[in-house]
Amino acid sequence: MNWKLLESKDVYRNRWLKVRSDMCELPDGRIMEPYFVIEVPDWTNMVIITKDEKIVLVKQYRHALGTTTLELPGGILEQGELPMSSAIREMQEETGYVSNEVEFLMKISPNPALNNNTAYFFLATNAEKLTHTNFDPFEDIIIETYSKDALKILLEEGKLQHGVQQGAIYKALIRLKWLNW
Picture 1 (cartoon, helix red, strand yellow):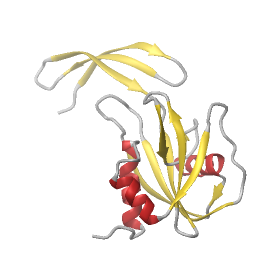
Picture 2: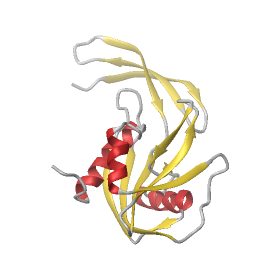
Picture 3: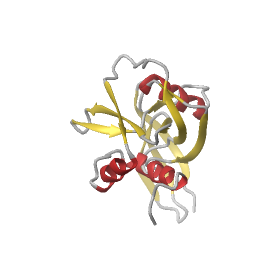
Picture 4: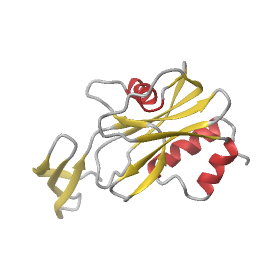
């Protein structure tokens, strides 16, 4: 079932992205070449629920889409950083919210056909805005909160465009018992 890696060459590399071209032997002996793999950093996201049961989302421009999106706060997992520490750091830096009730939700491979990275998702409940934001140099973020009903409308209308985050949002809604089955 597994492929055998015969050769691997870097095609492009910078600090955020590496593209490599692999030559692989399939179990039946066929050779797949080139098979491009995009190596990008692992990242974390936090589903933040406030004490008054609102979800905290961030609005920011996404140049690849050419539009502004609503998303979960999060960012790149720094080298040597634990995923939960990264998610807590990103929550505080991007939103100013703090919570002592943080739990692991899930980890997934965002696009296993092309990418080798992992996304980690956490749930923070009873969060309070206690600190100032500390955006990265190129972050231009607007923080918004939404009620349960408003969040359901956003989901139903497809207003949350980050597809990888939707699974974590739904998992959080199930855990919080916010969905009507």
